[in-house]
Amino acid sequence: EYVFVDEWDVAAPQAAVFAALSDVRTYPRWWRPVYLDVESGEPSGVGHIATQRFKGRLPYRLTTRTTTTRHEPPRLLEVDVTADLRGRGRWTLTPADGDRTHVRFDWHVYADRPLLRILTPILRPAFRANHGWAIARAREGLEPFAAQSLR
Image 1: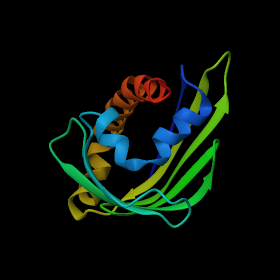
Image 2 (image 1 turned 135 degrees about the vertical axis):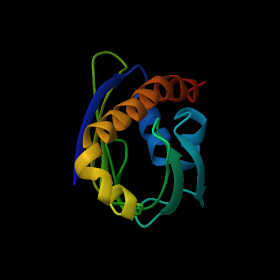
Image 3 (image 1 turned 45 degrees about the vertical axis):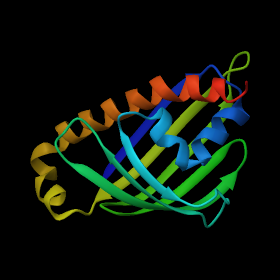
């Protein structure tokens, strides 16, 4: 099991941040170079299904399929994850100082790809560092994307 909790503040209103996070089709535009491709219909809240292909700094790519299980604008978005990873992701948004939004991302997943399962005991620190690199890209891209969506 991998459990990650990442938190940061975004200089954009909560509704704009939620809109960016809840529309997974936008991820390749702002979460670069991590998100390579997303297959998804119109965002529809609970029950919405999407397939994502992404990568980190390590030499492998992952595919996940997410199903939205909680969609409570503008504060909570939760998905169940299957495919190369299995588990749950949750975005929790709360107001911060001024017109800022505090973002918390809880990511609880198991590596289901056979090679990742085999390598986990040895490479867990590298996989954690890879996650940290990917989240840093989210931190860099989410704020300007959410702030721009207001214009």
